[in-house]
Length: 267
Image (cartoon, rainbow, N blue to C red; front, side):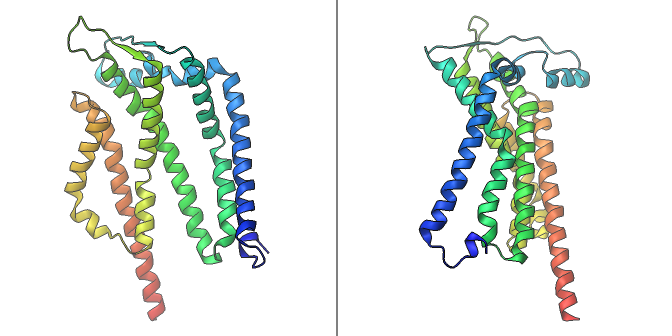
Protein backbone atom coordinates (compact mmCIF):
# COMPACT_ATOMS: atom_id res chain seq x y z
CA UNK A 1 0.00 0.00 0.00
CA UNK A 2 1.34 3.45 -0.88
CA UNK A 3 2.45 5.71 1.99
CA UNK A 4 -0.27 8.32 1.53
CA UNK A 5 -2.99 5.63 1.46
CA UNK A 6 -1.62 3.64 4.39
CA UNK A 7 -3.95 4.25 7.31
CA UNK A 8 -1.21 3.17 9.73
CA UNK A 9 0.90 6.15 8.80
CA UNK A 10 0.45 9.16 11.03
CA UNK A 11 1.36 12.81 10.61
CA UNK A 12 4.98 12.30 11.62
CA UNK A 13 5.34 9.38 9.21
CA UNK A 14 4.17 11.53 6.32
CA UNK A 15 6.47 14.30 7.52
CA UNK A 16 9.37 11.87 7.46
CA UNK A 17 8.55 10.90 3.86
CA UNK A 18 8.46 14.59 2.94
CA UNK A 19 11.77 15.14 4.72
CA UNK A 20 13.41 12.40 2.67
CA UNK A 21 12.00 13.90 -0.54
CA UNK A 22 13.35 17.34 0.34
CA UNK A 23 16.71 15.84 1.25
CA UNK A 24 16.94 14.08 -2.12
CA UNK A 25 16.04 17.30 -3.93
CA UNK A 26 18.62 19.33 -2.01
CA UNK A 27 21.30 16.69 -2.52
CA UNK A 28 20.77 16.43 -6.28
CA UNK A 29 20.56 20.22 -6.62
CA UNK A 30 23.77 20.65 -4.64
CA UNK A 31 25.62 18.13 -6.81
CA UNK A 32 24.38 19.82 -9.99
CA UNK A 33 25.31 23.21 -8.52
CA UNK A 34 28.84 22.03 -7.73
CA UNK A 35 29.25 20.74 -11.29
CA UNK A 36 27.98 24.07 -12.67
CA UNK A 37 30.31 25.92 -10.27
CA UNK A 38 33.29 24.00 -11.64
CA UNK A 39 32.44 24.98 -15.21
CA UNK A 40 32.67 28.70 -14.48
CA UNK A 41 33.73 29.77 -17.98
CA UNK A 42 30.87 27.94 -19.69
CA UNK A 43 28.38 29.05 -17.02
CA UNK A 44 29.09 32.75 -17.40
CA UNK A 45 29.53 32.50 -21.15
CA UNK A 46 25.84 31.61 -21.19
CA UNK A 47 24.80 34.04 -18.44
CA UNK A 48 26.64 37.02 -19.92
CA UNK A 49 25.92 36.28 -23.60
CA UNK A 50 22.94 38.74 -23.86
CA UNK A 51 25.20 41.69 -23.06
CA UNK A 52 27.18 41.21 -26.26
CA UNK A 53 26.27 42.69 -29.64
CA UNK A 54 26.91 39.29 -31.18
CA UNK A 55 24.12 37.57 -29.24
CA UNK A 56 21.81 35.52 -31.47
CA UNK A 57 18.77 37.69 -30.72
CA UNK A 58 20.47 40.85 -31.95
CA UNK A 59 21.66 39.07 -35.11
CA UNK A 60 18.10 37.93 -35.85
CA UNK A 61 16.74 41.44 -35.27
CA UNK A 62 19.36 42.81 -37.67
CA UNK A 63 18.10 40.42 -40.34
CA UNK A 64 14.59 41.77 -39.86
CA UNK A 65 15.16 45.51 -39.47
CA UNK A 66 18.71 46.06 -40.71
CA UNK A 67 22.02 46.76 -38.95
CA UNK A 68 21.88 47.76 -35.31
CA UNK A 69 24.22 50.14 -33.60
CA UNK A 70 26.97 48.17 -31.83
CA UNK A 71 26.96 48.52 -28.08
CA UNK A 72 29.26 47.59 -25.24
CA UNK A 73 28.07 47.88 -21.65
CA UNK A 74 30.72 47.31 -19.02
CA UNK A 75 29.81 45.26 -15.97
CA UNK A 76 31.52 46.12 -12.72
CA UNK A 77 31.87 44.64 -9.27
CA UNK A 78 31.78 46.93 -6.24
CA UNK A 79 31.98 44.49 -3.31
CA UNK A 80 34.96 42.38 -2.30
CA UNK A 81 33.20 39.00 -2.20
CA UNK A 82 30.38 39.77 -4.63
CA UNK A 83 31.79 37.96 -7.66
CA UNK A 84 32.28 34.76 -5.68
CA UNK A 85 28.77 35.03 -4.19
CA UNK A 86 27.24 35.62 -7.62
CA UNK A 87 29.22 32.69 -9.03
CA UNK A 88 27.86 30.49 -6.25
CA UNK A 89 24.30 31.78 -6.64
CA UNK A 90 24.19 31.35 -10.40
CA UNK A 91 25.69 27.86 -10.15
CA UNK A 92 22.97 26.81 -7.69
CA UNK A 93 20.19 28.30 -9.83
CA UNK A 94 21.51 26.66 -12.99
CA UNK A 95 21.94 23.40 -11.08
CA UNK A 96 18.32 23.59 -9.94
CA UNK A 97 17.21 24.35 -13.50
CA UNK A 98 19.10 21.33 -14.85
CA UNK A 99 17.68 18.90 -12.28
CA UNK A 100 14.20 20.47 -12.25
CA UNK A 101 12.62 17.47 -14.07
CA UNK A 102 13.83 15.25 -11.23
CA UNK A 103 12.56 17.75 -8.66
CA UNK A 104 9.10 17.72 -10.25
CA UNK A 105 9.20 13.91 -10.40
CA UNK A 106 10.07 13.59 -6.70
CA UNK A 107 7.44 16.08 -5.56
CA UNK A 108 4.79 14.44 -7.72
CA UNK A 109 5.83 11.05 -6.34
CA UNK A 110 5.12 12.35 -2.84
CA UNK A 111 1.68 13.71 -3.75
CA UNK A 112 0.58 11.02 -6.23
CA UNK A 113 -0.31 8.30 -3.67
CA UNK A 114 -2.92 10.63 -2.16
CA UNK A 115 -4.71 10.97 -5.51
CA UNK A 116 -7.56 8.80 -6.70
CA UNK A 117 -7.17 7.01 -10.02
CA UNK A 118 -9.56 9.47 -11.69
CA UNK A 119 -7.48 12.40 -10.42
CA UNK A 120 -4.07 11.24 -11.56
CA UNK A 121 -4.42 11.89 -15.29
CA UNK A 122 -5.56 15.54 -14.93
CA UNK A 123 -2.90 16.20 -12.31
CA UNK A 124 -0.17 14.68 -14.49
CA UNK A 125 -1.32 16.86 -17.39
CA UNK A 126 -1.28 19.96 -15.17
CA UNK A 127 2.18 19.19 -13.76
CA UNK A 128 3.77 18.35 -17.12
CA UNK A 129 2.04 21.24 -18.89
CA UNK A 130 2.95 23.68 -16.14
CA UNK A 131 6.59 22.59 -16.20
CA UNK A 132 6.87 22.80 -19.99
CA UNK A 133 5.23 26.23 -20.09
CA UNK A 134 7.43 27.54 -17.28
CA UNK A 135 10.57 26.42 -19.12
CA UNK A 136 9.30 28.01 -22.34
CA UNK A 137 8.83 31.24 -20.39
CA UNK A 138 12.40 31.07 -19.12
CA UNK A 139 13.74 30.51 -22.64
CA UNK A 140 11.52 33.28 -24.01
CA UNK A 141 12.97 35.66 -21.46
CA UNK A 142 16.58 34.62 -22.06
CA UNK A 143 16.39 34.90 -25.83
CA UNK A 144 14.05 37.86 -26.20
CA UNK A 145 12.83 39.81 -23.16
CA UNK A 146 16.06 40.19 -21.23
CA UNK A 147 18.35 40.96 -24.20
CA UNK A 148 16.04 43.69 -25.49
CA UNK A 149 15.53 45.10 -21.99
CA UNK A 150 19.25 45.09 -21.25
CA UNK A 151 20.15 46.64 -24.59
CA UNK A 152 17.71 49.51 -24.06
CA UNK A 153 18.32 50.23 -20.37
CA UNK A 154 22.04 49.46 -20.49
CA UNK A 155 22.64 51.95 -23.28
CA UNK A 156 20.08 54.59 -22.28
CA UNK A 157 21.63 57.95 -21.39
CA UNK A 158 20.03 61.18 -20.27
CA UNK A 159 23.15 62.93 -21.56
CA UNK A 160 26.19 61.73 -23.54
CA UNK A 161 28.44 62.85 -20.70
CA UNK A 162 26.79 60.34 -18.33
CA UNK A 163 28.09 56.85 -18.99
CA UNK A 164 26.62 53.55 -17.76
CA UNK A 165 28.44 51.13 -15.51
CA UNK A 166 26.12 48.24 -14.66
CA UNK A 167 26.94 46.11 -11.64
CA UNK A 168 27.18 42.37 -12.07
CA UNK A 169 24.72 41.98 -9.21
CA UNK A 170 22.13 44.15 -10.99
CA UNK A 171 22.61 42.21 -14.24
CA UNK A 172 22.21 38.73 -12.72
CA UNK A 173 19.37 39.74 -10.38
CA UNK A 174 17.39 41.24 -13.26
CA UNK A 175 17.99 38.15 -15.37
CA UNK A 176 16.75 35.81 -12.63
CA UNK A 177 13.77 38.04 -11.78
CA UNK A 178 12.62 38.22 -15.40
CA UNK A 179 13.08 34.47 -15.86
CA UNK A 180 10.77 33.87 -12.92
CA UNK A 181 8.29 36.50 -14.12
CA UNK A 182 8.03 35.13 -17.65
CA UNK A 183 7.89 31.58 -16.36
CA UNK A 184 4.83 32.54 -14.33
CA UNK A 185 3.27 34.48 -17.24
CA UNK A 186 3.57 31.41 -19.46
CA UNK A 187 1.46 29.43 -16.98
CA UNK A 188 -1.62 31.25 -18.31
CA UNK A 189 -2.87 28.37 -20.53
CA UNK A 190 -2.43 25.85 -17.73
CA UNK A 191 -4.20 28.12 -15.25
CA UNK A 192 -7.11 28.66 -17.65
CA UNK A 193 -7.31 24.90 -18.25
CA UNK A 194 -7.55 24.25 -14.51
CA UNK A 195 -10.18 26.97 -14.05
CA UNK A 196 -12.18 25.55 -16.97
CA UNK A 197 -11.98 22.08 -15.42
CA UNK A 198 -13.46 23.52 -12.24
CA UNK A 199 -16.14 25.39 -14.18
CA UNK A 200 -14.75 28.80 -13.23
CA UNK A 201 -13.71 29.93 -16.72
CA UNK A 202 -15.73 30.09 -19.94
CA UNK A 203 -14.48 30.72 -23.47
CA UNK A 204 -17.38 33.12 -24.07
CA UNK A 205 -16.21 35.26 -21.14
CA UNK A 206 -12.66 35.37 -22.50
CA UNK A 207 -13.87 36.32 -25.98
CA UNK A 208 -16.15 39.02 -24.57
CA UNK A 209 -13.26 40.69 -22.75
CA UNK A 210 -10.64 40.06 -25.46
CA UNK A 211 -10.13 43.80 -26.03
CA UNK A 212 -9.54 44.34 -22.33
CA UNK A 213 -7.06 41.48 -22.36
CA UNK A 214 -5.18 43.02 -25.30
CA UNK A 215 -4.84 46.32 -23.42
CA UNK A 216 -3.60 44.46 -20.33
CA UNK A 217 -1.11 42.50 -22.45
CA UNK A 218 0.26 45.72 -23.99
CA UNK A 219 0.65 47.25 -20.54
CA UNK A 220 2.48 44.18 -19.24
CA UNK A 221 4.73 44.13 -22.32
CA UNK A 222 5.51 47.84 -21.91
CA UNK A 223 6.41 47.33 -18.25
CA UNK A 224 8.61 44.32 -18.94
CA UNK A 225 10.44 45.95 -21.84
CA UNK A 226 10.23 49.75 -21.53
CA UNK A 227 11.65 50.43 -24.98
CA UNK A 228 10.83 53.38 -27.15
CA UNK A 229 9.94 51.54 -30.38
CA UNK A 230 6.76 49.75 -31.39
CA UNK A 231 8.68 46.87 -33.00
CA UNK A 232 10.20 45.68 -29.74
CA UNK A 233 6.90 46.11 -27.93
CA UNK A 234 5.21 43.97 -30.58
CA UNK A 235 7.86 41.26 -30.28
CA UNK A 236 7.05 40.98 -26.58
CA UNK A 237 3.28 41.44 -26.70
CA UNK A 238 2.57 39.08 -29.61
CA UNK A 239 3.67 35.83 -27.89
CA UNK A 240 1.72 36.77 -24.76
CA UNK A 241 -1.36 37.47 -26.88
CA UNK A 242 -0.91 34.09 -28.58
CA UNK A 243 -0.87 32.51 -25.12
CA UNK A 244 -4.19 34.18 -24.43
CA UNK A 245 -5.69 32.87 -27.68
CA UNK A 246 -4.30 29.42 -26.91
CA UNK A 247 -5.98 29.63 -23.53
CA UNK A 248 -9.31 30.44 -25.22
CA UNK A 249 -9.00 27.36 -27.42
CA UNK A 250 -8.08 25.18 -24.44
CA UNK A 251 -11.06 26.41 -22.41
CA UNK A 252 -13.36 25.87 -25.40
CA UNK A 253 -12.09 22.32 -25.78
CA UNK A 254 -12.70 21.58 -22.10
CA UNK A 255 -16.25 22.93 -22.42
CA UNK A 256 -16.88 20.79 -25.51
CA UNK A 257 -15.71 17.66 -23.72
CA UNK A 258 -17.92 18.46 -20.74
CA UNK A 259 -20.93 18.97 -23.00
CA UNK A 260 -20.27 15.71 -24.83
CA UNK A 261 -20.05 13.81 -21.55
CA UNK A 262 -23.24 15.44 -20.33
CA UNK A 263 -25.10 14.49 -23.53
CA UNK A 264 -23.77 10.93 -23.35
CA UNK A 265 -24.98 10.60 -19.75
CA UNK A 266 -28.44 11.86 -20.74
CA UNK A 267 -28.65 9.24 -23.51
